[in-house]
Amino acid sequence: MDFAAARKVMVDSQVRVNDVTNRELHAAMGSVERERFVSPERAFSAYADVMPEVTAGRRLMLPRDMGKLLEGAEVQAGEKALVIAGPYAAAVLARMGLKVTVQDSDAEVFAVTGEALADYGVETVVAPLSKPHGEGYDVIVSEAAVPGRQDAWIAALAERGRLVVVERSGPAGKAVVYVKGKEGVSRRELFDAAPDLLSELVEQPAFAL
Image 1 (cartoon, one colour):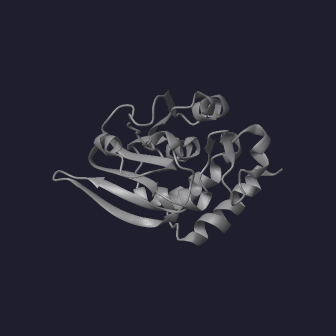
Image 2: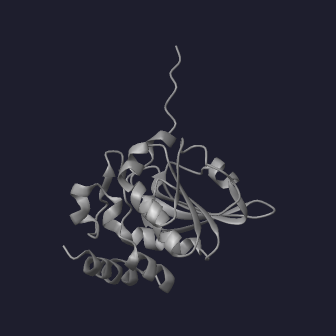
């Protein structure tokens, strides 16, 4: 399979046509080897309009949705970024000149993607997703959806930092951007999306006798 040709088709037919206009983002998505961020037997599906499997518990975001999400983050080269459950997004941000750490609670994700992440200069951290590694981030991104506002993630942002994520409580969700300011946090909706939900962030019902 000609992966380089498939990357160009992905950017032209799934990203550009969906109102993603950032040329640096186009170039990054057109150069990062997405096939290296899925399980080897799924490499053939890396550039299709699907969410290919990384491990049994993780899939990559649709290229269209990830492009729109990263454009909504308004990233700049030199910024410090944390990516949660998103190895491909981490590599794209690194290619755009950001200093990137990617965090996941499933070590198997990095067994699949670790070599590629190292090649793109991305630091990897295995830790619970409810507790971001470090603080003072200009950007936090997740390729997976969350059940609602994640205050711990917002707390890890620097002033003027942005969190871009899909909030989902049913079949579909909303991509949103939070911006942390001196006086509080603003929230703005970006577009509809339905990536997989990070189940470990869902509160389990408590039963009492």
